Image 1 (spheres, rainbow, N blue to C red):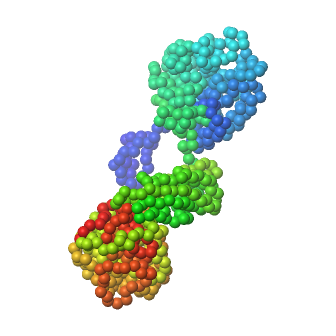
Image 2: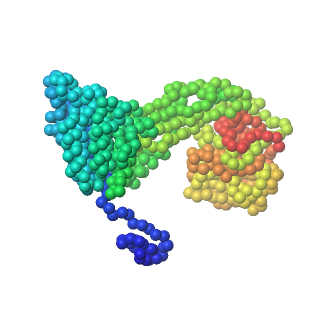
Image 3: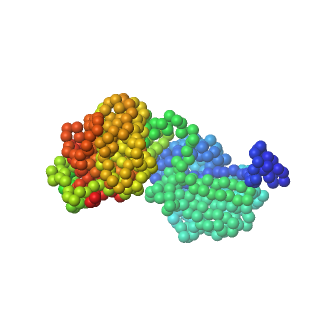
Length: 638
């Protein structure tokens, strides 16, 4: 036992440090440990399965095991000489990309001959010429790797073709069993022995003619057989541990599976075996699950980030509905590929009750720098009286087609802009007794889509009547601020007006705390040279300010402030009324605030907050940018 820098170590090797530390940090084991991989079946699936095998080879080179084993069915087979040799060349050419040795196992696809000129031993000669012996073993790091041949067949009947489903052909021959006995004797001093074959002959429910009971007895008596591995069934299967021997069947590595259902044992994979003197650990890794950290260069990441932020542009504008919530038309939306790689883009729509879109999705490959436009026909039936109109969403799935792999990017959901056509005049008539907009905080607010109104550059005025319930430290009253744009806020109970001009915010604040439970008129004005704040018609703050206003595409929130995801934050608690945005500096000196506004040519937005129509707050301006209600917000009598 020693003390190194305050660290107690019970090992001959020690953690070196000049820091005081009471925690014991045991060092890793130094035994002769290693790992190897096992590939599943390649055959039975489409020709493209060879690409899965090629990806497994790439994964293996990153994992860098000592060696790779297979469990048979390397080629499609069931053919004659010429076709078999072509498939062998393809398989070997792919596997020879491994940087470590690999070892074959013969399966029925590799041996069975179909067609003219079938030899008695079928493709055995071809297999042993191009792949290796049908059964063999070798030693590595005091471990034995033993390969059996499970497709010997019944050669007693001349001319009889091999058939693994025939119980008479499901046995290991006396010759092979005798070889097995001798091999196990030669390996008796090894730490572990691993056995490989194609058919899981221990599965007597699948192979009723198997003589595995005799084989298992030999393996058990050897005392150092750790695991048996096979394939063929194309599904993961673990037949428990018997007498200290674990039994594993692999699914596929490019072979046929009914679909990618890993939880059911159907997947393209390889098994990773970690070997230590005291035992092994076996894990199943999906093909393609290993990544090279050297691929994640800043340039590649920036390119994919451009795609993740790719704008989805509504070419035809908002979906315009009649006052009763009904409507129909064509809508076009486009994407521009901002990256240096091609993209696979799928644009689907998710819509609530009453909406119909056709087609339900569109798909396109978009080359670098190219633009693709998706077109949809849409209809909406009449809304129930007073029912809110739920905006549809574009569901955007994008695959980035890298030269090494297809990279699936996070799915995006983009609200489809929805507006209403001209509303009846009575919608904007005053209500008696008076009502106003109530905001209860906690994610509440009225969202006004940025695409439905245009303030333009230059002069503007933002104003409203407000009645706070409490003195808030930081609340958005009417805001579009997110490192840009403009907004009216409450800060420590004082009104603040913010305008992002010439590269930074110009902020003016009232010195007095706003009265709680009382109506006050507040107005922020930018006149081209200064930013001014008026409370109840009196100028309470002014700062010089000029320059271009920094824009954003976020919604304007009434009763909150948007974050970068267009969600309401820092909600206001109280009442709001007569909210107006104008493209003019309406106030330059003291004035008497009016309780109700009427729209004029300079009015960009005007919300009387008298009533809801189809669940939205009507806009009395020419913009018709009706607000969408979210959270605890509504209309109620004062």
